[in-house]
Image 1 (tube, rainbow, N blue to C red):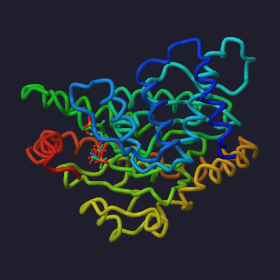
Image 2: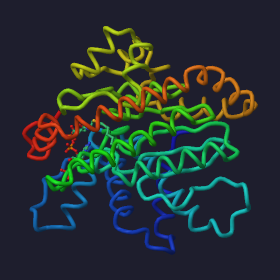
Image 3: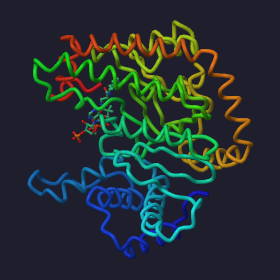
Image 4: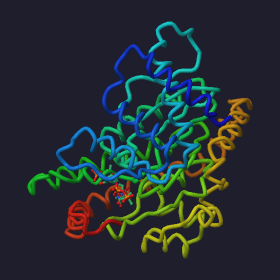
Length: 358
Ligand SMILES: CCCCC/C=C/C(=O)SCCNC(=O)CCNC(=O)[C@H](O)C(C)(C)COP(=O)(O)OP(=O)(O)OC[C@H]1O[C@@H](n2cnc3c(N)ncnc32)[C@H](O)[C@@H]1OP(=O)(O)O
């Protein structure tokens, strides 16, 4: 059920009862969601750069873009619920619903036999930092072993995920480039391996635009539900890079080589409907009812016998597992070279100099 105005008001009251200060980042998130839910997209003039507090608040609100009021209200209620529940977790009975601690870039929750892994850097469009890569690997490892029926990835805010955080490649001295590239190739390979090896059904709830590695990985997901606001974009050539996440194999297999080439070589951005027509997405939902429809459905599926679902997933996927590992290894090693190329270094510099937003 979508959060009602009454749920929203109750949540506003609950915030005041929190005993622990949730920290500035969470307070900004609460502020932004509250403004978006009550007033809609940011319409206030941007504060001056020295007005630090009001600028941070404005940035947080503005980062929510055109997120619908209803979704903001729901996210606000969910966030307050997760804050309240983590405060009372010491009194909670074992096995009850819980937000898992130890994550800074994700919100990981277990509810209704579903492990939900939510990218949680909405102000940065959920771009994946090195820390986030590690947290995702950790969350996947735990979700593979816990008693949930399946795992679901989604994004907080208006984006699903804007792909690799390009800051991962900045502040590297010229004589460190080779070593860094090697380091990231190993990280990438290990990261994608976790998706190839994940033993249970893996579902993506694509709440908004998806870019780069968050798109390529979808070929390794079992089901992809998308809001009609979602887009799918892999600007690898624009960045002087090349495909990863086994997309060089999975995308031609899913959509045919001609369509895959348009995405992976030319960086053609697909709408949710196009991604559905090309077989990358299982179903598209209107954004206004997306969360309610998808989660109602997933809660029903999560009651199916978990072992049967797990075995079926493995039957479908395991035939190609070794091949996928080999492809992942090859893609990572090619990227290791690409990251050291002038094409790539210049494209990343361009992004940060705001000349070439993709
Ligand atoms: C282990 C290594 C694996 C490597 C393999 C992975 C490859 C990839 O994923 S390639 C794809 C990389 N991603 C991109 O190229 C996207 C870059 N971002 C953008 O083009 C845009 O930010 C946007 C289209 C995603 C959103 O544009 P807009 O709505 O105009 O919002 P802003 O650009 O103002 O973004 C808000 C805020 O977030 C920062 N940000 C967004 N995405 C990234 C990112 N991928 N890396 C770093 N930072 C990102 C953006 O810089 C803004 O920050 P502030 O200026 O500080 O507010």
